[in-house]
Amino acid sequence: MPEAPIFRDEPVSFVRRSGRMSDAQERAFAEIAPRMMIDVPRSIASTSVHPDARLDVAAAWQREAPLIVEVGTGQGHAIVAAATARPAENFLAVEVFRAGLARTMLDAERGGAENLRLIEANAPEVLGTYLPEASAREVWVFFPDPWHKVRHNKRRMVRDGFGATAGAAIEDGGLLRLATDWEDYALQMRDVLDRAPEFERAFDGEWAERFDGRVMTAFERKGINKGREIRDLVYRRTPRA
Image (cartoon, rainbow, N blue to C red; front, side, top):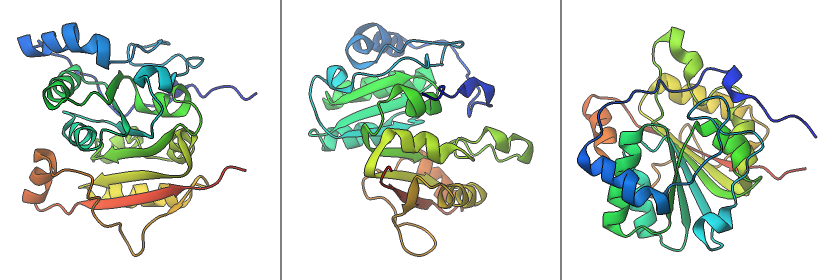
């Protein structure tokens, strides 16, 4: 059996910052997190995942249902809206910023999204090893940090090898959906995934149509107001051998 990849040998796609939590955020972690957040076995860092750990999906949601995973959920607007609108599916938010996780939990509680769970961890480790093979119907990567300075491009999440990482979690025929407001990152995403044997294009032309399951957020609107074009991509997981 091949050894699990050691993700901390590569630069992570985030710099973790922390600040004082508000009373509401503290309440989210004290009262909501025990039923909504998944306790992840750690490895060498506070946001790492032990390479031998595997999520019991049915136990985490206490049911069998299609699983939709969003990595880098930020404030959680997209995934909370989707989970609220689609109660028959299971949704998983993956994020490292505690303020964003708290906001997501508070909004999910307010909206009655009982089908949402959260993981505080580095997304490639969740996709590559923690989620069981082929357990996700879809994986979403919406507006990841572009790391637009050339010297920081190596931190981008969608880089060489990401196809294999995301492809491990997605079922055959499942979808990988991406969106960004940075043109050069969109081009990099497309180049990386066009070359990944785990995926094939699920769109015609240069770019995919805007995913109608993604709500318009303040973040996306800000990019549009600054004159940046939003580019969507969608890829289908190819059959495993």
